[in-house]
Image (tube, rainbow, N blue to C red; front, side):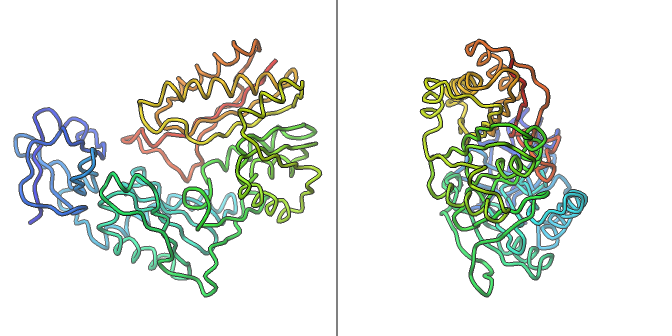
Length: 397
């Protein structure tokens, strides 16, 4: 019999709405001695069964729910069914866009808290970030080997959040290919992209911006474009493929710029059409402003500015500053694509920040499109935290 967890009175409300997190302050009593990541049964203060989830004694999120069905067992078949269901959900997207790179499992939104799994051509890259995911690692890997027998599997569980769960950071091959190469080349719409699952950001690449990159291409024809925080230059690939006159990629990382240049070669795009500048984006934008350099289109896809609520005000200042600078660099009727991947930054707040930036820039901006994470990064209605990527396309007078 598994350990039992009793909640304090009134703390079952979120579970009745099927939210998958139980915080430490909600717990009244733990009956038994569950080990890190073990599955426990959760009851309300009156003893009514509510859910079963993974126990994490070191985390503020003390339990992450696996199931709201009392008879459902968290075993090998459970993980096989969950991953198969996630695979089926994405079949239309994969087929329609002819994708060879996609998110297979998006954590809580696919009913697997702390589990992120991406497919890059013939390599699967995994992040197991919760105690429960680590405890059931062998079952998750077995399920992947059953569903993807020809694929290699790489572990990218080298994220600091694992320390909050009392876990060590891990990285390396779980199932290596014959050549041990961590590099895959994926197809995204009409462009090819090289991904390194060993050294790339996150699991290797930002798949969530796929639709936004395609949208950028729709506005690119004949335009001079500044692509800020360009990373491996994939926004620029779409813009160049769709007739951009000139694209300037800006990133502080020389490694990212080198990979961006490789991506240009993969797509037969000239470095005369796409230029690279290694620089701090904030400083370079101010330099361009002083020089009077102007662009038809600016893309802002910065890293996450807010990791916690305490950082949100500072993040707002950062977003406002960079959007103001971008607007000041735009020619009349220029196009701004601006994004926030900070989950704590709500869409309405992000829109307000961009509006305030327009006021400070003394420009009139109009929102002509809204963007969000691609459809293989679904947002479960019981887990609104799954909506993290917000984007706006603005015309700036």
